[in-house]
Structure formats: structure tokens, C-alpha cells
Image (cartoon, rainbow, N blue to C red; front, side, top):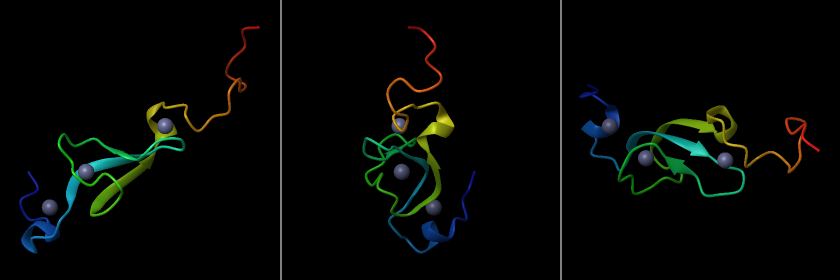
Length: 67
Ligand SMILES: [Zn+2]
Ligand SMILES: [Zn+2]
Ligand SMILES: [Zn+2]
């Protein structure tokens, strides 16, 4: 896999997972056991709506057509 990550070689505290940034909740990391899901040392960051999370959407937004 990625055996030659710069941060690994430098023994930096970091993570190879992807951080998902939620609007309402704490950021979370896709890596099991990640101890620092708050962006520190993460190469990949994405907003939660990119993974189908709706926490950034206001209640009753346009997607909800039932009434
Ligand atoms: Zn690394
Ligand atoms: Zn979210
Ligand atoms: Zn992580």
C-alpha cells in the first residue's frame, strides 16, 4: 500500500483515512481507530453531503415532497 507516505517516514502524527466534515456534528474519519478526526494530519477531507449525509440541509428542504 502506501509505504512511503512522507508523514510516516517523518513519524508524524497523522492518518490515512478520509475525514468527513459534518455541518452539525463532529468531523469523523473513515479509518477505524482514528484518534484525531479533527482534520489534523489528514490528507483527504470531504463534506458530508458528498457521502449522502443530510445534516447540512435544512429540515423540509426541496427533496421532501410528501405533505
Ligand atoms: Zn502515513
Ligand atoms: Zn453530515
Ligand atoms: Zn483519521
